[in-house]
Image (cartoon, rainbow, N blue to C red):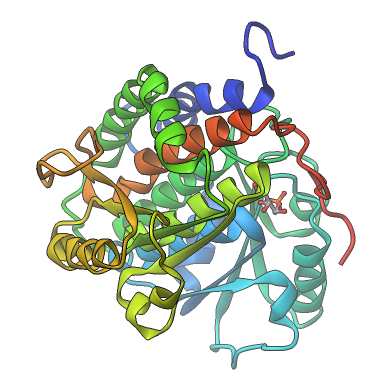
Length: 357
Ligand code: F6R
């Protein structure tokens, strides 16, 4: 039930702090230590490489998860779009572990890969919101998202839940390998929870941003570097699927290699600036597009902000910023779609669960 919310999408965006708390609860023991199924941590420990397989928003969560597995747990990780995997099958390592990320657990493209790698005898873990779903039943292991039913076609709370669960998996893997990551994850996730709530409380501001930058336009660009690049891909997918504005996410550094040709007077460019090491370079990209007439909306993080920024996100651990910046993009997309009278919860041509290849 939607309750007092106008749409399931808005309700689900608003549920994200509660989902974070539920994940924290479910993945820690009585002493507050990270806790996952021992069989899963052993499978990760045995693996010499992780292959993440997913589609759409879940694929975008996988891109963030790869950063955790590599930066924290030091496990080489590849992320693949499920529908491409069988054509562009990489040379597999000796001891691969496959991780399937799927909100529904029913996505046919992902299942096709699972069937294929099972035949070859490889181990698999499904990260899903639906216990007993096909991908959960057919994989060796399951980690649940604890996000509650996601009804709106556009995925919101499942994305942040997927990233949070992947961060927990990577931290446990680091601990098992005696790697000190210098991150006390659960308190950091608790900070994320608070930051998410702050943005949700600022929904009116998100509506203004949507009105100012996206009400008239036919297209929009999302740019970012590093973690912000991954979120830019997700932000552009959210906007395009519900508002039908043609939106593309790009790596800031790639603009000059072609995309910048599309910038005209008034083209909206939404830029994220949440990463210290690329703060100067992404701001350089903003100047480049502004010089060609773009209307830039900069969303930065506390500590990295500059006067020209449109919105400043509360500070969280740098690798956890996707959990926070995406909430702003979800809300901006939601209002942009609303302003265009789009059917937010049921966008045209899309199904919640894609059970055909
Ligand atoms: C976008 C969206 C889709 C799904 C994709 C995979 O908002 O919802 O891109 O993420 O169809 O679905 P699952 O995660 O159920 O495998």
